[in-house]
Image (cartoon, rainbow, N blue to C red):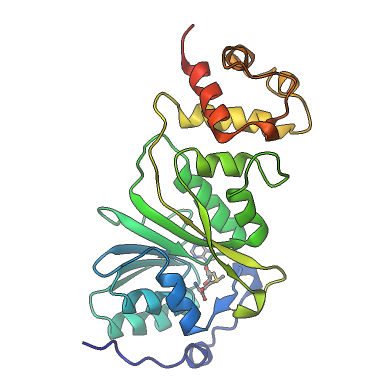
Length: 275
Ligand code: SAM
């Protein structure tokens, strides 16, 4: 069965009066070819559950529906709901829309799911940190495909000894392998944001055994909270950290940004090990 013909997104936006609102961080993607390429990043989605956060007028949503996904979409701007209802009608049984703030509402998806979102950057980062944090691993999600400001995307995939390397890199890399899947020029958005964007794709990997996520978070918070200082100084207030550094054979005169993700994992594990 061929997918239903839909009106161009510009017409949907005009028909429903969906002028982009700055307060909601709205920068819409209207190029359907580009949207199709974004929807293809996680791989084959036919029959798969997808959580889309912030569908807006539904550009990415329609690409996901055309790919055969079962989509749950959370949108907090009520103005977008009629446009999304039209999509739900065009793809019967494939789209469930939840009105609300994705930071607060429960998506209610049972079983594994993929996440795709082009969100305001502050909301995107908060959700990213939430999805990658926590003790339970592997997580319920199978992949995250998220648009970020390019500068944030670079922090997520950063390697040691670079100014972009910090807590976000360790959080994202210690049990997952994030990559920049696509760079998106600012001119692709309506209205164009001030900066360039990039899409991060993450799939969960194996969690190193014997490490608490909470411990690692505390450790990186202390280490990078004062990133110019030597570890000896920045970790002084964290019980067991200097002993763990010593046990790992890491020179306390080093600075946080010189440590690899594995180094942080080793220190966190040693902090959890009774000696
Ligand atoms: N996905 C659409 C696209 O690519 O054209 C819209 C992108 S626009 C950058 C972000 C969308 O997220 C807007 O529709 C906005 O209303 C919605 N949004 C912002 N904060 C949200 C939140 N906390 N929960 C759910 N949706 C949110």
